[in-house]
Image (tube, rainbow, N blue to C red; front, side, top):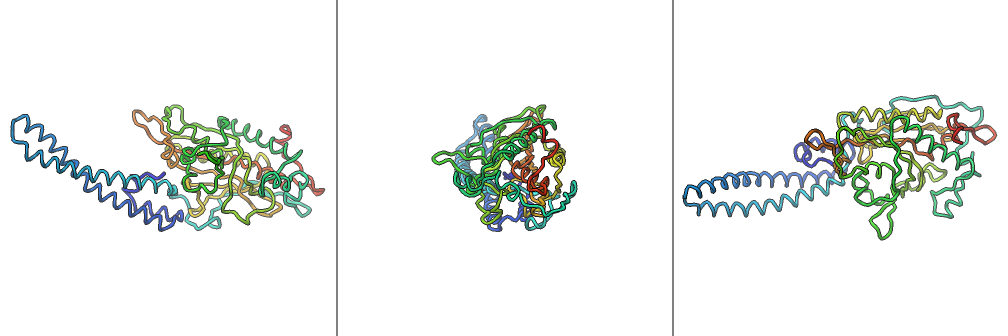
Amino acid sequence: MLDTKLIQKDFDNVCTKLRKKKVDENVIESLRTISIKLKNKKALLEPLQAKQNASSKLFGAWAKEGKDINELKIKLGKNKEEIAVLSKIVKELEEKLSIIALTIPNLPDDSVPIGEDENDNVEIKKVLNPPIFDFVPKEHWEICDNLIDFERGVKLSKSRFSVLKNRVAKLERALINYMLDFNTKRGFCEVAVPYIVNRETLIGTGQLPKFEDDLFKIEGEELFLIPTAEVPVTNLYRDEIIPENELPIKMTSYTACFRKEAGSAGRDTRGMIRQHQFDKVELVCLTKPENSDKFFDEMVECASDLLSSLGLAHRHLMLCGGDLGFGAAKTIDLEVWFPGQNRYREISSISNTRDFQARRAKIRYKDGKKNRLVNTLNGSSLAVGRTMIAIMENYQLADGSFDIPEVLKSYM
């Protein structure tokens, strides 16, 4: 959540940054209207409070000296009534501002490029070269049409569900174990978390209230299936004050993820690119603000090195303001090469949310005598299904089968 004090103090700069993130002008205008009202009412309230404090001291002194205090008492009473009325208005406006702030995205860093959408993202670098084939490479559903059963997935659930069989099912399990082992060797502590969370947890990381339509809700309960492990893992420390010497806290977790994909009608309808249920291994870091960029770079490097260890060509993209996620101050996407599609596709997003999530979830640390908000970071390491089909396509053979990376052979 945005700092409401910052909104009051530097509204024009906040608006400029929100426009960079393509926030609707009507939302900005609502924010402006309430902010101005609140600022004006506070400007009226604060002198009255100061006057009341000064007069109260005078009242005590006069009473002690035996002076006539009746006129002063009347003035204090009227002043107190005005304070009560204005205090109620200020409190209501502060509550309105907080409610709107929950629906406002994080401010982008100054380093984030200006842009409308994914077409304006900036390529930072490419890692490894795509493989060269002496035959026309196929897409993953052509390589393994007997190992990925889409029809039975639909029969069991609905479209965008699938069933994995034999070697592909084992490859998925191997990837999960390999990814967790890779991340723990890089200093991330493995945690296993629930796949069902409450409303407060989703508010903490920013999925609610704005994105409820994208979530699968448990009927009759204030519980939801998680869209990513970022949600429960980050919220492990919700409403807590962490001792300074325990930071950074670096965690990795495997979970299934569930998304309605409400806004993706007609996109990637074939294959496993966009599923309602998919597996992912996540990286999460809680750190002091001054170390935030350092761990962001470390998480990008970890995910990129993981792809390199699998022999998968990929590239790093800095997301522009118009493509930046709700909670992110900055994001680097890793896109892996898919030979069958002859293009790079997203396989990981690493984001620094600064103190945006920590303010919502009240995750703080003790800095001397003062409690300060941590910075939270999260990133895919990696989307398991997309990694699996990237392996199928990049390691495919002319006879329609596929090989696997050397590092996975012991896991198979």
